[in-house]
Length: 285
Image (cartoon, rainbow, N blue to C red):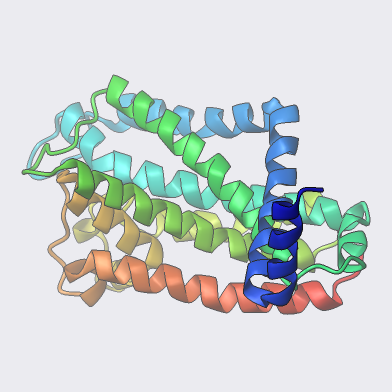
């Protein structure tokens, strides 16, 4: 071992934060290598969001009125922020299933027996899932352009605003993977983790502004949709993309969607990371 590597290891062992970062990156690398060796996981993860884009665009595109227009292009530009947000949040099920699978095989117990930073296994797993989600989002954006999605369709935008929108989407996806991690540690099988990771996502994503204009909802349902963390990120992405469908609601998250998206996502990370790490310490296969 080189002197530089030995020095880095000594510093990492002396600094708990550096040690946690190093251990998390090692676990993340392990999971990324596993994804490369099992490419069908990534491929099948791409198929579902692409199907959503194509089906919603061509089946519902001419039936939805957005900004007074029923054109398929207007709905496509309105839709894509919702599809992007749905895609990053549906990665939650995969995160939970992966952790449950590691639990089932006894791998988590072996990790816990090693001198690793607490939470490194979960952090590494969620970081690897974030990389996979980013790849999926990149491919999905290319497909969206092919079906007619354009940024700046409702005003001016720029590259920094577009990157900020994708950053908020990825932050929401990362936050939700911690919910998936907690579910994966709380169930006994990967199948249960997959089901448990999806059953609550459908109401969260569909009781929102992702696919329809909430102004057409009944008042009590619109109130729920306006305060939904998922809706805040969708609205923030639409504003930053300068796409149609910006909300006319007076609810604070809809008036300040970028800040609301940041606050919601950070709170979810803090709360569910704390719960997941606590569960990790006591969970058994």
